[in-house]
Length: 492
Image (cartoon, rainbow, N blue to C red):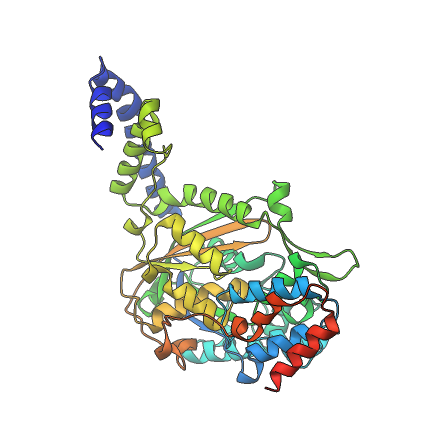
């Protein structure tokens, strides 16, 4: 510390330091601040309001829960798996952070994961649609005929007539309703849908919009043994959310949240990022969802690019000033000072100066911890995402809204609080947005039946306790022997 102080003093005592500071720091800094202020004023003048009036997360029935025994039976049904794959799956499931009360689609529950039908796919999405939309209309006292815009996002299922058309037909919506059916957008799709609605709101006044976000799990189960593809079977679970939005100023007093900004980052031009997360076939032409080893690298890069654009939009002026000054000071320090600080020439931004709550995509335990470490978040900040992952799993694009529901059920959200949502998706994409809470919120929503038991200090699942013998099994153990061993444990 003394050496660093002396080095800094020596640096500041250089001849003509005042002129250097004026040229290097002050002049560009003043112009940068003026530009940022002007940009913020222009964005505020051009933008239209975007409010969330209500949202409704989907809770499937208990007969669709995936506990340890069922998951073990599901693995046994795949005859292509051997001991290496059993060990890989055990490690993945144990470290996933997912509990025993998540939900799966009915065709998988019924043992028809290898032979899904079109009807299975339609039942999966319609069961979710009608449950959440019925509740959303009842909660908000809004008639389906009042809806001006409908956006549906499901990445891995498309049908004709479209999914939006099915909803319009079910609820007899107006002939002039604007509908958008998005596919292939991955886990970040719900914020893309919100951005689409926001842009329509800029040119259409006093509109009501609904965003319906979910994923089709049933027809996309991977029946093979490629490790990069069976991993998706472990992570994804059934879920969904319907969100009612408006830009009508007269409805602001009823609104829950107001959108302050949204930032979308797309790394599709990079082959490495593009290929790290995609639907494909394995060597035997069995379809599935591939997650490559380059996924963490692509996610990190997309996250950094997104924060670089997000920061100036939401950070207070004092934090921007601090960051610019510290960054420039470190940049122009001599080499010896950089070496003494371990080569860490960068300066981290404190996003907590602009954010009260962090709503993170539940892509997995590693995703949550990685984002938390990058932003310097506490256990309290990460609790909603971790508990959501444990209770509902990774529900793809709808996962953010379950995390938001946890915050509301725990009565964390108070008027004027700021929420930052961060999601990742295939492409590769990172999307983020900031919401302002417009009134105190305390609805237990989809968490009503279990919120009292959270947070849990122990998030471990029973897989290791029940199947730890797999790690000690003889390398020559056949698949039939593994299955017989697992079956014998079920009867103990």
